[in-house]
Length: 271
Length: 196
Image (cartoon, rainbow over the protein chains, first blue to last red):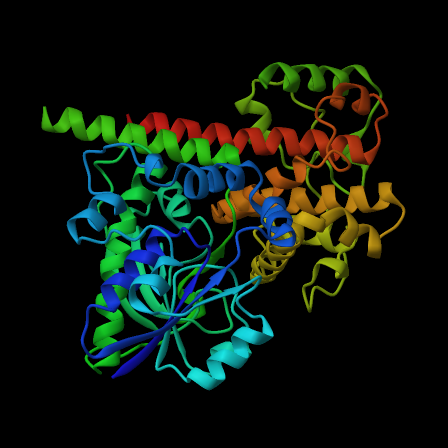
């Protein structure tokens, strides 16, 4: 039996819920606990607001207030469609405890001492990271931590790499990478990369929504393959990529323009 | 934005500012950009700058000086063979700005005082990052500079015309940031339009 702990950014993360539900369907997997960051955390709010500005407010509004209503019907599969298809009805991580007896450990920060103490006792085979900020080396040294990065490594490390790859017109570098986390930012050993065609999509928000169910599938399947020894990690070289940071709104508007022009060209080509 | 650029340029021509006689090179190497915006050229002068003798080892934000920045920028303009140092410095500066952005003023004024000295170094560093962006087509440089230009203690967009009338290095560097950042963004707009 392989023991897994899930790290989650907030109690309403549909990505965390979906990954947890899919993993626990495997008979040789035991979800020992879900470690979740509390949403009402003033210091977290201010530090993320300084970094993200108004985008944080929009994110909180969509994820914590609108929840499912943030996903209006689309002509592609959203995470809500995927969860319905997979019969995942849970919408809050706390409900896992009620329905499946999986402990949910709340924390202000994933690196809190009580989280570390719990991990030492639980001794999981792997931690599946579904968001929640930086992880310090005292946790990374305990066990493998698996992450799904929205970008192709080693080329695009860091933040907003989907937008950066579009701005650079490197559509071959748009996709996902499942990798093991280390103390650097997206510098750990790679398990799998997956390119994704984004030409049918007009906005970054659509692409990010479209990515969510794919991320769930990829991180779960790669996790299971890795635990079974069927997938071997390989290292990346720093010189093969760059670290990117939060994109300025003026550059972001250029990304949206590029997407709509690409979409326009594609429509013209097909007609 | 073009209106602001035209107004600022008019002030440069009407005043007695002699921007090219500064060792900080605030309006150096702008020929392409001046042509792009159809601005009246500045009195030309052959580029005869020699690289200042400064050590560029151990790149770090707080090791910056105007001499080092002028040296790095001249290396770009003169296609200097040791321009790997340009990349290393740019990488360090971008990283510092992005990681410390939320507390940038506090972080900078903790090391560099008074404010106008810190502002001038930040403006000069931004000018270097924009030159680096054009050299390496690495838009991370522009991204960091756009963020610095949002900080009113560094860049006074709304008062730029009145700031320019002072003729200080700070004013000229602010004009440079406006010109070069808008030039790069314009080029990207053309690029997008080129797609269609």
